[in-house]
Image (tube, rainbow, N blue to C red; front, side, top):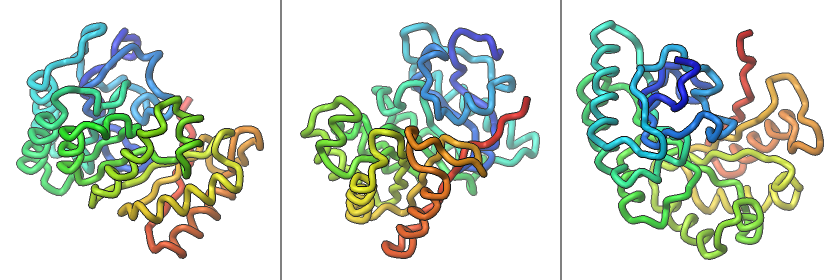
Length: 259
């Protein structure tokens, strides 16, 4: 399974850094080479993935995704396994799936029936927030974890290459999510002191339920200056945000992978 050309639609369960024992649901699979470097499921490997694969250049239907998820969720419940999060995460941004709302509602129903204490989570790059249906879908999730690491419109455009008018649109959409979790990392392009300060100020305006700061360095190691903020600096930032804004903020360092 580890050598499959395309990611499985259902992954895990895996023990993730932020979500505990998490079952991954991938509505937008693509070639493994296109997966983002911080993919929690790639970091953990896919040897135990359910063998249901997407076809090349074709998104699976909502029905296939939900049926695949249901099969695994019911199997886990009957086996007495633990599950802390049903997590929608894609090789491409999961908000790109045209039927995300339908998928989210069905996953919520499955979770409610089989694992009522588990969270329903989604990890997104904040790319689809211009769509009303995407915004409605995000409200279904207990933990909509969305990327936001740009304190100004100018920096947003420089880092993402997207249109400047999207920045205001993203901020408005994030503010409207009452269970919002902000995810951010700080690399060479956005780790200058002024950029971090403007980001922190903007995040306070968004008033998320939680802030997750990701580090690309293993715990106990300092990041190279050219690569962004060290773990120590990230911890200082998290402490400052928590104290000044009252928003729970934590740093999640990269876990050392087994050989």
